[in-house]
Image (cartoon, rainbow, N blue to C red; front, side):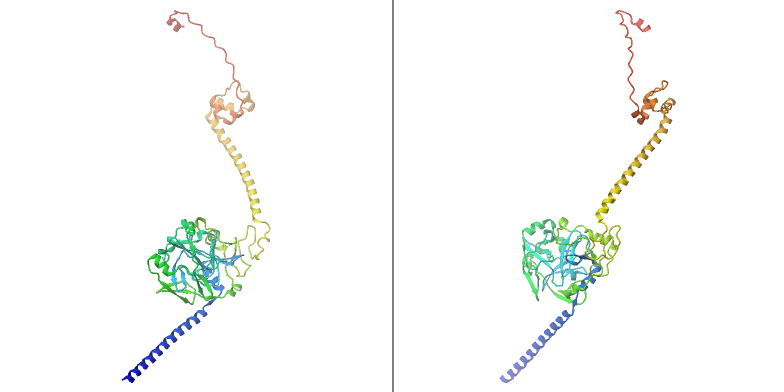
Length: 444
């Protein structure tokens, strides 16, 4: 009996070892397949340029190179509108509802310019979100990172770049609707940076608040999603605890040989990030308005750097202008032409005003003369026909009346005032003797 029991135990142990070996081999095979598949998803900067051209305008800036301005609605803000946060195995990840969200929210950086609005600068490094995090006083905040700042440090940016919400709404689908822009300054003064980072094969980015901390403060569980890579560009999908996103390996050296097809020369430099007017994006920036109202002004170019098209100044031929010669090749600065036009317009307006005034005076004279002739008596018409000298020395048979003077206001201004004639002294009645009867006075 002991030998039989030992034999059975040996058989069970061998079976268990085989099953365990088979399981480990399957897991290794799946991991190898995933790694081979991930390595096959390779892209270049040209993928950014081609895939995002239908959703915005590429602009060639002297400092950042080719940058992208989304043709979004008023109120647009990256990492705030049209998306939400999700806790993943890579940390806090922004899940965008936009078809181009796989690129601009996981590669590159963002900055704000009042003329362009939010501007995206491409990059080749992937992260669940290129943002900086703050926490304190019962609120959590994040802000898009600009070029030149690294993860884990203190990110210095305008206060109105930050979006603060309570932990109860951090993972809400409409998280931006719980943002109060009027209290940004207060939150920035009463919160501190979260320096918790994540290192993904040498790629360092900000992890954000931890799951256990949010669960403790929000008093509700937080679901952790697994990130899965798909093979073609498109919108990010979230289902069954998995976030499916296009996550290629972008070759950094491809930036030198890639170029967008619809790039235009920057009319204003993008520069460092500036304040958002009013603290919140409530109006459409001027560049986006021009893109929507005048799409023909952004027709695209040959795709070569330095040969970008831009609207020509008045009197200037359209064409390809080499980069760096836009200012020197102009025959005359535009503001000088504007000053000459303003002076010429002032002269023309003065001449038109003088002609209109002269015509109005002639019309008033022609309208008033028949009316005065029809309404005045015969002797008054005779008086009006007299020359100016007759006004100074009136005819002895015609005396000007009060109505005549009122009907001719212009002649009254030219006519000298008549001299007052001395009044003849009237004889004073003699005093009635006292005691005279009244009847006799009445008869007289």
